[in-house]
Image (cartoon, rainbow, N blue to C red):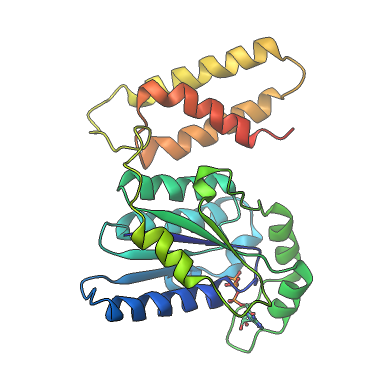
Length: 264
Ligand SMILES: Nc1ncnc2c1ncn2[C@@H]1O[C@H](COP(=O)(O)OP(=O)(O)OP(=O)(O)O)[C@@H](O)[C@H]1O
């Protein structure tokens, strides 16, 4: 069953909103006699990750994302609902989460807490004792790096935006989107293939390198080599471990990835 990915700037009310969705789903499972279904709630708290980890944009933060992703991979299945309650502010990361859901053929949606920055700042600073706060500089840094979801990207779609002063969370719409609608069949690009394809990494790297070469050839001045290298590395890292891509579609997917992520 589905993956619900929360996203929003720090302290925008994601956990509060996610808990309400969880409560709604639990009740509805009972009402509809779906006794075999369960729901898993994953966030920094449940993974024992401190807000301190966002202070260092390098390894620690990557490890936090890795922990969330592994947890989702472990728990997502056709039977259980998983709520990934993280900042999930990088679109490349939301893409990874989406790939995990597609790979097991389960629906997915994104719930975005669209809370204004100043409101979230107030909520962060007035957190009660016992609730960890972001330091002001970490808060600002995460806000500036936040990549707003866009439902034109398939990994951000369907997208539900929750407005902070709207008391109603569209729980029924979320239910319809992920429990009633069938998942698209696993995309050829995200089907998990036997790892025996030992050439996989070689082919993946070769194909993406060829594309980089062609881009550099035709537009020498507009996109930096360093940026292309970085995106290629990112794409390879995303796709080398979690879900094996169909080699016939690597070129197409990499171009799509570049189109989405190149800073123009
Ligand atoms: N609608 C609201 N009205 C008032 N306070 C709220 C509202 N929603 C959340 N809060 C408060 O704001 C603080 C942050 O909320 P919450 O933990 O849900 O945000 P978050 O986005 O999950 O935070 P984080 O980025 O740390 O994961 C909490 O103290 C919470 O009680």
